Length: 487
Image (tube, rainbow, N blue to C red):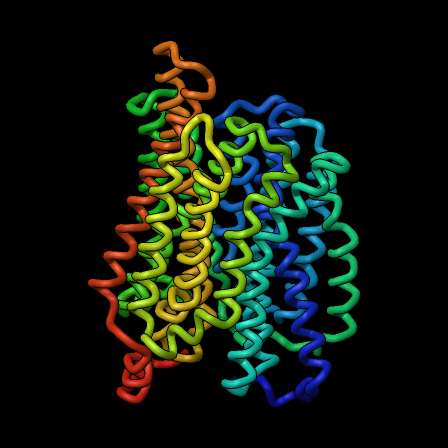
């Protein structure tokens, strides 16, 4: 880190700064899950259809995923602290708009802006932590705290969402961000040292950011509305075709431009490429599971928002516990590959159990076992997944590599959710048309989605077991043998 020649921030203050950064990240992680519990309430209140409801989550995930890489680059160019503050401000204002939204369009637009702010905060906070903690042992500790916040944030989101929706109304799941955002802003101004941008003289790859984001948005839009428009209709095919062309344009831009958003040479590194494909598949399964199981618990089993929050708690606690310490121990003992494949297989088994959840489901019998397996699987697999993605990369590009893997997660999540929610809706419609009861048709749709999700996770596990180069030795060897030139 050659940009650390200005006054370093001293011991205690550093950990305080870490807490503040994590609070900012927590607020953003919360917003990926806090909405799940409130979905049925939002749906009845603003009159969403089953498929358009996906947009409340997807609008956020798309802009979030689409701008993560750009956010990271902007931080490099204009200073991480400045961008962190800008991101927090944008996110907080968008939360206010979400909370006051009275129409579908306004809510979805505000969610998209929230995603934009969230992307900047997430991308920059990792770089800030890397800059604050330069020695390996301290950095590992700091990253552990960060990982715990990311994993635990989801469960707090589900609980808080249930509590707020239950006690007040769904508007408050967004309004709760206002005091948090204000506090994070004030504390950051006080604690974070001013750091100038260090990639001076480099250009921003705006073309790359635009093409990749618009491409994914069109693809998800086409998939989400595929059931209504018809899968072979000119509109759906046209949208998917345009998305594919834009993706090709993105790859062409990245190959040519001098300072690309996503250096394609990173994908020549086998572990980076495989980890990203696995990330897409796994996120597709996980996000869809979150969304669909919340609907199953509320619409089929008749749970209140609060009960749904509590139902998710066991899985999330297990996940958080593993990501905080156990997972790292497993990696030290067995390397990356084993725990990763094992965790993904457990998650696949959990999803397969969910696919058997009936209309008259009981919590202990039909929900709890699947949740537990998913919690275990996700908890074990998350750390090695990130480590593998960064294992072959030169240290100076670790920020980029983590940005790319996070982008894969978000994109896989958005696309996967769109595909699986569409599959479920199509199955539900055909069952209802055949004269099945509402509950039976819903369950048939959900079961299909869970089965496909389980298949995604299983494919990711097999990929990991067969394709990854083993162990943490690979990275050491690569760096001593002259890894791709740093910078």
